Length: 392
Image 1: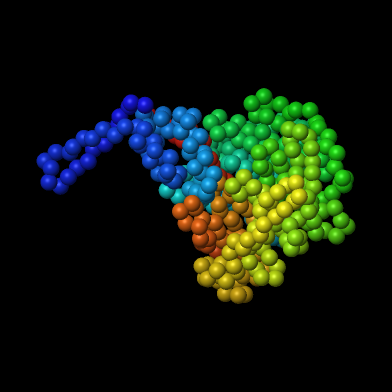
Image 2: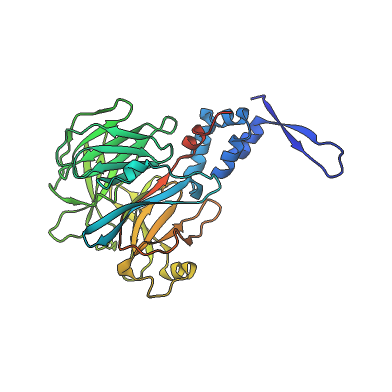
């Protein structure tokens, strides 16, 4: 690429600004090593550089560079349902916390949907929030980056229990959904064709098992949920559903992983991980699946309870195990949300490629709420962010 971009540099002693042409190839080498906020600023400097950044080869380099670490700038915000007990029943209010970052982007959610109590958020991935109308099969897909809302036609699958976003297109923001019942009968929807595909049936060892529908994750084309196959309601398995091959497999939870509290399933650098707030030590631990064939896991402590209390300025009473819940994890930003109860949230940044230490901050100003549910993180990928920039 022979194109040059002129950069003006001024000197205090020179009577006029000197112009020096820098080749685009050199600028792209710098961009490939930069964080998200820097890449966005570079793309905004001019049409030539922006087009060069959006070329397929550079996009691949940027995608590969971001696989090795997290970037907090990719988290746009967090949404949740706040529950207040009134004399005439519970009142549910949708809340959105916009996370400040150097890209100055915000979550965009359709106000009418958020103000409609009958729509309940059921799944979220890569900036797409899926809402269900009551207990019916009517779904709405809300792009929290563009603000666009898609009405999804009713599925022909009965007794839908599980919802996941299989994927969101980088450039066109197209998406694919998967819904399933307790017996792993499932159906997928593509926004490109605006149609549901045929219902597929998967043979599983146990039928009618209980799933944690709020704790799903997707790696590639495989969806994962914690499940319970015993009479006692403790999570003791993880089920993996391959959407393309119509195959479901079960694996046991990692040895020593407590199943009495809510856990998080998350993809970290392309591997399945289980994040748990440990009962005995109050620390946050992470098990990483190193081999799916033999279900081999490795364990590490993400952060101790003493470090959480120190950084957040909490005393022992304010950080009780019974009141704390892990609510969500951002696979792109590396941000974990810890619910302390009553509407108090902590944000845990697991670190970037440059800084590996965990940073704990308050996600919101502490405010009283009687109950909180359906907490979702809304992230954006770098390519979608660049594609959505205004042309000039």
